[in-house]
Image (cartoon, rainbow, N blue to C red; front, side, top):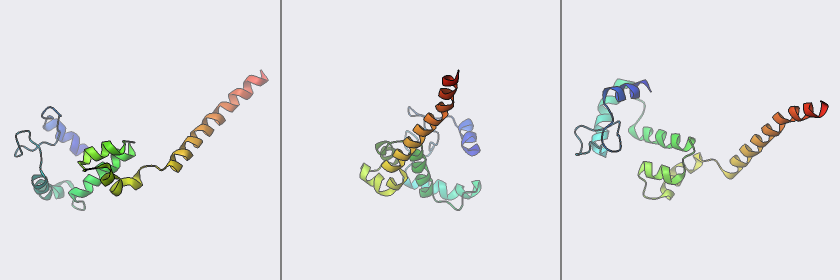
Length: 127
């Protein structure tokens, strides 16, 4: 994260959408395309200690981070520029919690609430 913060301090976000990784050699908006991003990655990833990772690995990391933060499938689809939610679900569907996962989490939360309130209820009865 220190590398990202350093980049943001050095290069202010650009454009209406406040891009933090803009391409000074890109189109008029400074956007990266597949070729320019790949070229930049190949020349810089070793310098920052990421030589074991591909640019596509970072894309998967980004997608899984969005899912872990509870973003819905359409939001992730748009962020990755997939043609449909089906494409996104085919690649990342296993990362979203299942109905069973949500049920277990809700039951756990309910039990914690009930059990943490019980001593207060018992104390009120005895006073």
